[in-house]
Each structure stands twice: as C-alpha cells, then as structure tokens.
Length: 320
Ligand code: AVI
Image (cartoon, rainbow, N blue to C red; front, side, top):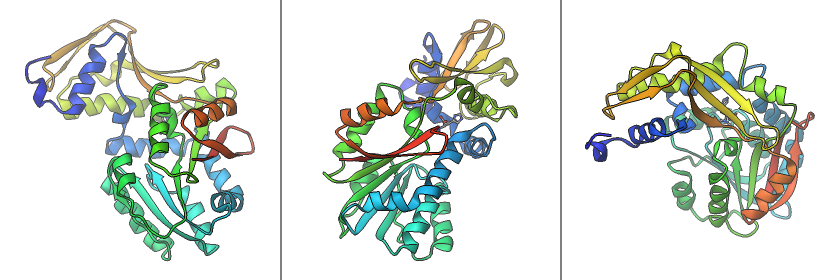
C-alpha cells in the first residue's frame, strides 16, 4: 500500500488488509451503511429468515416467564440493550414490564445516534411511561457511563444472534469482557441461533428473492462509493456454506471471472482469479451444550433457556 497509509481511514485499511490476504476476506461489520441497514430490515421480513420470527415468538409467548426470571428475588432492574436497532422485538418485553408496573429503566446502546433518536421517539409515543436513557457509542464505553442508581441489578440484552457474527476467537473474549463489566448477580439475556436441518439454515442465507445476495454485494458498492473502487458488481456471485460439524455458516462473494479491481483510497490494484472467493461473514450456529460451555468460560452460569416451538433459536439467560 502507498505511503499515505497513516492518513487512511480504518475502513480503507481494513478493506486493504482483507483484499491483500490469501484467502481474501471483508468484515461483515461494514455491511451496515444506510442501504445495508435497509437491506437487513428486508432480510428480517423474509420467509426464509426464521431468526427474527423465532425471537419474536419467544418474547410474545413467554414474556411473563421472562419477567419472572429477570426479577427472581428482586423488585427492580436496569435493562440495557447492546445494539438496540429499531427495538421492534424488545418492545414486546418493554410493554409487558410497564403494564405489570415493574420498577425498571431502559438504556439502549448503539453506535448510531440516528438509530437511537428514532427508537427514543418511537418509545416516547408507544410507551410514554417508560424511562429511556439512550447512550450512543461503543458498548463498553457506554456500559461504563451507565449511572449508578437505585436499581437492584443490571439485565443486559444482546439479541438477534448478533454474537454469531463474531469470529470464533473473538466471541469468548467479548463475553468475558462483558462479564468483567457486570457485578455478581447481574444478568445477560443473549440470543443464539441453534443447529438445525442444514437446508433450513442455508435457505435463510440464500433467499429466493436475492436480498441476502444484495446485502453482500452492497459491501462492494459501498467500497466503490466511499473508497473510489471500481468493483463490477455483476462479476461476483453470492455463496453461503454451512458446516454441520462446527455450526459455522459462512457467506462468500465469488469472482466469476479473472479480474482486477483498483481502489483509489488505497492506491492499490487487487487481482482476482476466476472463481476466487472473498469470505464476508460468519453466522455461527450453536448447540445448547456449546452455549453452556461458552457461558462458563466467560464466568456466567446459565439460569434458563427460552426456545421457540421448533427449537430453532434460544434466548439464554445467564447470571454473573
Ligand atoms: C445480524 N446478524 C445476526 C445476521 C445473521 O443472521 O448473521 C446478519 C445476516 N447476514 C445475512 N443475513 C442476515
């Protein structure tokens, strides 16, 4: 890369590292520009993408039991959500807790102030009695900013199988760090997608309408727009795989011809062989046994698992 490296954005540096590697990779954290956010919203409404519906069903059908488990022997808690998004599913819980007269507050944390503004406005209208304290920023900085108050414990929500997008090495580190930021007795309510019929999983990442393909291709469009690249979007195929032994679901963009791509921001040309792949995303699938081990490694114990009627998905309640 040229000697302007020091002045390059983290985005440009990360894209360069990935495309200069063998095999090539790009991080799925860069999927989410404005168009990527919209595409993900569409994915969540797809027939094949069961994850969102499962979590919705769990909250809708088991909200009373979830509340009982959150409270246990206490009467109040501070509810914190990491990566709150539009809060559609969380609203089921928030409404129920409010209707039951529970003493709690809600602190959504998100990197995007825009997302938080929309969510806060929406909550003001839909659940006027709810105490909302939105915090913009990195999860750990934001957790440190949460004020001490009268609530007896903290309950952290990390929903939507977002943990599945961490690499295998980084997920345990993240959970350990999260645990280090909590006190004994605090709770973590975390969503995991479970191992199941591989065809069901593959269809969820290869929908008939091609929205997931577009979601992946949009990353190349973003690199074109923001870093002055000349990716030909027609010359990449989308190809997900699932390994039933490890539960790893991987997405790839595959160059359907030999080609070169130039990126102005890095000043480099990247060569692709015909059918060479770029790995773009991991969406890990878990067994209940691996979730238990995961919890223990991070210093938590599993209090209770809430699954949907098909056992496709679990919201697992962990105690520090
Ligand atoms: C956000 N995350 C949990 C989604 C997943 O299922 O891994 C992102 C996604 N990628 C393709 N479809 C949805």
